[in-house]
Each structure stands twice: as structure tokens, then as C-alpha cells.
Length: 261
Image (cartoon, rainbow, N blue to C red; front, side, top):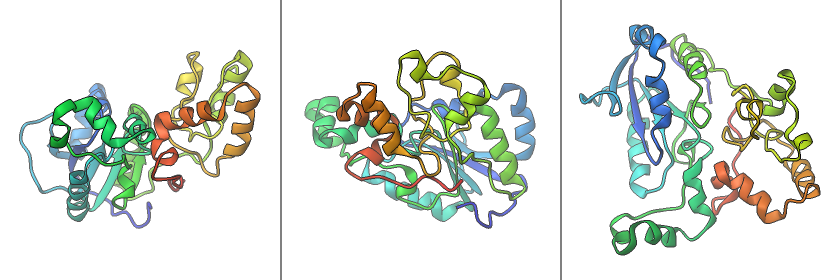
């Protein structure tokens, strides 16, 4: 990952959506003040949230959403073949996000629950992140993505450099902001094993880290799990905490490695 990325001079960018809420695509449109400058550097060839014209000629592909159907895999293979660089945006594409909750139960039963008697018309598979199907060159993490992080990633890509992605955990950012630890507030938190880069957004505003950015490098999960059990969490509750955004790691497909930092 990240090796030998070509510098892109005004690349044609295609934005694709799999199973997601489209919130990360909207974050790109929410750039507002910066969007005019961005459009001086790139050209959108395909972006259904923003334009009706489409083109199959593109250099950089951005993919939001998780793989939930066999047809998604074929779509990803076609995208990978056409694009010089492929990246994901948001938690649904990596680590697998909210769609991954389907992996915690019976996939067929989930389809029947949603579609009822017409479930057969919507064939479904266990949920996977994009990089379980194709090689991915970079991830823009978060639920939704951070606008500044997207801009920094885009800037790096335009000059052929490695997009920035912190190797350390959210706990580091919490300490830098001098936040009171969620555990000291009587809560529990996944910040110790979750990759930083969000500025510890949720803990800073009184919530806890839910793990939406996926695992940090070398996460010490056994130590965190022991602490969670000490604070009264059952193994089932701990698994449910992980599965909220990391259902591919906790589900039927098994655990995955973190992206290269």
C-alpha cells in the first residue's frame, strides 16, 4: 500500500457508492469554501451525488460503502482495472462500518427481515470491506470522513506522496487535548485500540470512541478487553462494541490487519 503512487496532474476523479449512507460523499460537497480550489486541481468524471453526467474515463477512484452483494465484487474489479489509484472514504468501506453488523447474525435472515417475501430479489453475502476484494492504495477513515483529512490526502496524491495516516491510537489525541478519560468518567471506550486522526472528536465532546476508524498499528486488544471485563463488560458486550464498526473483523470473515501506517 502507498508504494509508487503516480503524481496526478488534474486527475479525473470518480466517486462510487456501495452499501452506505452517502455521508462521506456529502462531506466532500460540504467543503464549500475549499471546493472551488479543489476543482482547479481535479475534475469529477463520475459523482452521482453531485452531477448527472457520467464518464468511464477516470484516473482516481474513491469508493464509499461496504461490499454486501456478489455484484459489488465485480463492480470493484472493474473499477480497479480502470483506475490508476483507488482509495476508500469512510468506515463502511474500511473497516466495514455499520453495514458489518449484518455479519453478527444470519445473513439470509437479515435479508428476510429487511425485504420480507421479496428477499430473493436482493441476494446478499456476508459484508466485506473494499480491500477484501481489491488492492486499495489508501484509506480516508472515519464516520463520516473529516474534511481536512480528505484535503490532506488529496494534496498528497496530487504530488505522488504517501497520504498521511497516523499509526497511533485515539488515546494519544485525547491526552494531547487533556480530555478526561472515558474510563475515569465511569464509561468504557475503544480509543486505546482505534487509529487516530479524528482529533479525538467524540471523547472531546463528552462521548466515547466507538472505533469507527478501525484498528491502530499493533493494537493491544487483550489488555483493553481485560480492562473492559474489569469494568463489568461481558465477553458478549465487548464483542458487540467491536462489531459496531468492525463487523468484518469480529464476524464470520475473521480478523483483518490494520492498513499500513
